[in-house]
Image (cartoon, rainbow, N blue to C red; front, side, top):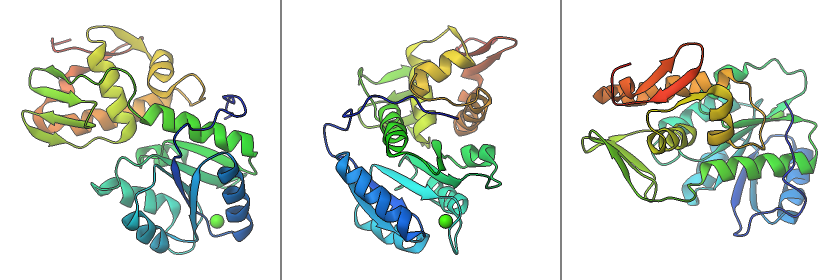
Amino acid sequence: MCAVAEGPGDGPSVSKSILLVEDEAAIREMVQHALSRAGFEIRTVADAAHADLEIEALPPDLILLDWMLPGVSGLEFARRLRRRDATRRIPLIMLTAKGEEIDKLSGFEAGVDDYVVKPFSVKELVARISAVLKRTTPVGDDDPIEVDGLRLDPGSHRATGRGEMIRLGPTEFRMLHFFMSHPERVFTRSQLLDRVWGRSVYIEERTVDVHIRRLRKALSGQGYDRFVQTVHGTGYRFSRHPD
Ligand code: CA
């Protein structure tokens, strides 16, 4: 996994707030210093319990979460954040140590948006954060889209099915937005990675399948999962017509 830098000085125009959850003091200090230099508001805590307090006080725009934490692990904490309405849309980047036995797929299933492997360079970390923020912040067309009672409102970042709230993670929301803005067209996994995740990030293609599964599950309550269709040998399509 490698990130393509967005270029130095490509920091956020409005200060974005980041919460770092990391038990190693040296990494906390390094990241705090680097990210404040890059123009981010950064808060740091050493464990999940303190992270909860910080999030409750002021929800951050993004959370950097160490995988190996004392007490509640990073993965378990990620799952918790995704279960709560107040935190389910906050983008998450996991920090993992080189050689650490981690199951990235279970991380993506838990709603993790990206990974950074220690030791990482400041440039890579900033590039990853910028890429994740870019793809999880709604941009461009903010008009609500509706298909057969399935309604997506980019302005309020809400999706509803016949008036009932549909709970979506940030990647699923963006994916559904992309699909609903491009109905009846087949997209390959690689095209979806480009359009939904952004070109500046490298993620394995099977990650697309994980998020498709999550999206279908979220839509299945009202039967809208049938709109997200697999086109065998090619990829996926959003269509209101049976495939
Ligand atoms: Ca650790």
